[in-house]
Length: 345
Image (cartoon, rainbow, N blue to C red; front, side, top):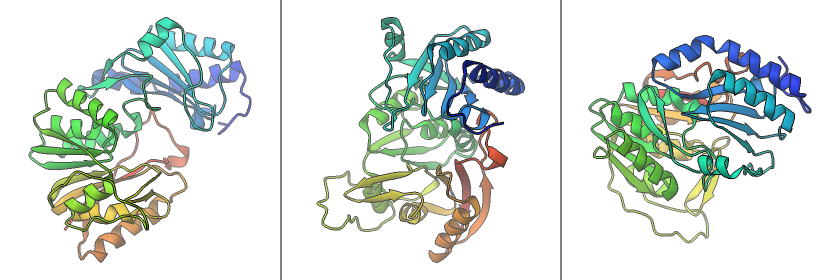
């Protein structure tokens, strides 16, 4: 199947989506059985139309184009196929500009729906949803389902640290899984507000804590290290945290971000985050590491994590790769999102 189409026709979009739906027959049945109504129905870069993604988010279909806007005819054909699957409202977000912000206007009725709070289900866990809001991305990253499943299955009676928590999907899954304590850390008050809503939806708010902070000072304090910053940068105020270790740490940083405290760079400097994160991980505890950059080689990245652990005088006693589910197909099994759970001595 072609990996990209610079000028796809309506027929090609329709054919590609039809094939994707056919390939997911068993997946749809399993999702229904597992009380899951949020998943990807079309992963365009792999399935034939580069930059076109179509997802179900609860009681709605979300179409997003990142490289080239759909024509009216293409949108009509896609919509017809989606309605055949389930008669749900359809929201189209054209994000084909370089900054990835939504370009297209909706009807008043569709706009009201897209900006209203919805609820979706994943393996019986409830998550809040808005298809258009002050941020850019939907409030739950669907390719991280395998991470939420792992954390839910390995959190009973354990303390959990959820770094770069966004809307706290991982933290919510941990709490539902029986965690004794969940600390969610993110810089965005908007994301944490959604996380609080998720905790409340699942009646686990008493287990969950929410810390609005840059990850660098939060991590360094929890690791018992001195908080520093980039050269000649005045450090803003940050929440004070006591040094603490956790049974399970989840590290899912963005590709690149810059702040007075440091630079997040998943290509060149994953260790600046990984080192303090592993110091917050208890002996016999687990740290789950994520890297969403396609150009980062899976084995080379894994080897660098092991070396970093060994430099701290510890060992990786077990590791488990978490592979994305089949609604997120990849070329030759090499998914851009790499997730590995490391158990440390």
